[in-house]
Image 1 (tube, rainbow, N blue to C red):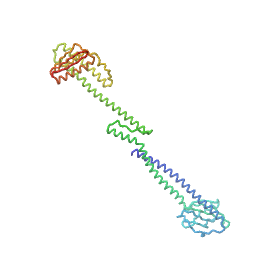
Image 2 (cartoon, rainbow, N blue to C red):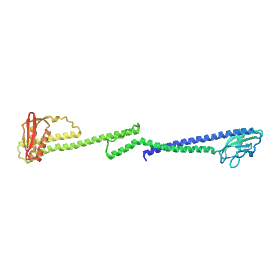
Image 3 (spheres, helix red, strand yellow):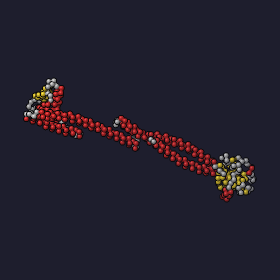
Image 4 (spheres, rainbow, N blue to C red):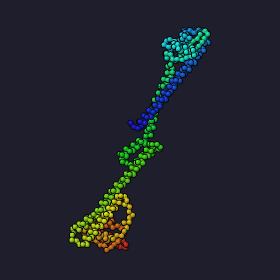
Length: 394
């Protein structure tokens, strides 16, 4: 069952219990008050009747007044006069077709104390003592069916039950709408979560909630969590991109020194009778390229760790450009093309030895793949500027 339905039923249940307690208390109070009101009414009539009888100077006869009230069907009060033995002298009503018969104990109590009350045959009775010089002593009883009080209670009960049903319906509707309003952020949270799961779009957010309660705090916490996840995902994507660049850079940067080492190793293996100078130069190239590889690996590892912070100082150191060109010439010994070099004995420039050598080597390697049979590398120094010219006959 959904939370909204549970909250609605909780509200209806609480309202039902409250209304039931309220209705029970009201009915008990009204039932007591109805009995008291009926007793007051009957007592007033009984007192008046006793006063009237005490002032009479003629005897009462049972048949002198018509019997007009049947307590079985009528709710009207009626009066019955008794002598001191409980015999009926006069009556304006009957119960089951006969005048109301008072128990002897009720008559005795009224004669001794002046008044009494009782429920007799479904009739509420107030009894008063009277004394008349002509008639002697007796009691007068004023009765009314107990249905009166019961009908009042029944009517009130019906009204309260109808009112309770209407109140429960209203409470249910109110609880439904109020719970829906209170749970709206949770519904939006579920919808947003489902949409994020379906689309992977972490930029979505819950709308701001002005409620300063647990639901508002939950919405704010959820948005904060989404922001954190989005940031972490962005950082992860940047890390993956950096790793891809690292692999690409490593593949590119390590290819050239490996090619040079393989070329010089092939030269040494294929030319065992090469001159000592050529062998020394090849060995030096292998050592230089190994050092270069070490430097590249250290730089790439630093880049992978994210701490490769350079200020460009390595690109502004003195480099012998003539030596760079001659090292490329030696690396190209095993290529299909013949590399000719024209360069001054020494040509000092500010730069990075490895990057300059890599640049020249790329041009020579491209000429080997797509050019002719000869590649010339010329270093021209003029008016403080140095130019490297790579040409092929293809």
